[in-house]
Length: 88
Image (tube, rainbow, N blue to C red; front, top):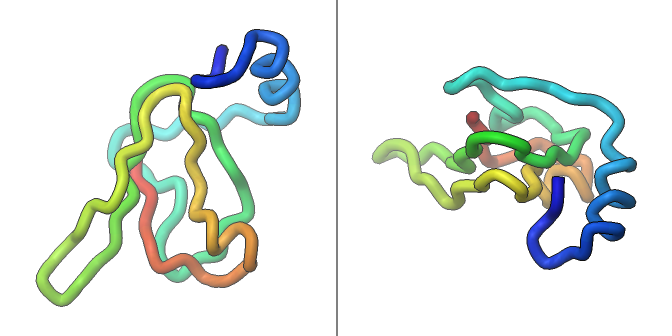
């Protein structure tokens, strides 16, 4: 897999750092709000929707596509509960 903006050797180095493969079925969650994010993923096929809930309903703030990273950055870095959901 190559990553956008990286050379093939750079992509290989980055890919070597991801040690496990997890397949999410459509509709399954990578992360649910209120849970602390402990991982960063790379989407090899498909997409993930980042969204949060408001009193008026769900608000999609980002759609991560194949070849991009997926995580709740604030939750991952600060190890605090996430305010967003990430769904395949």
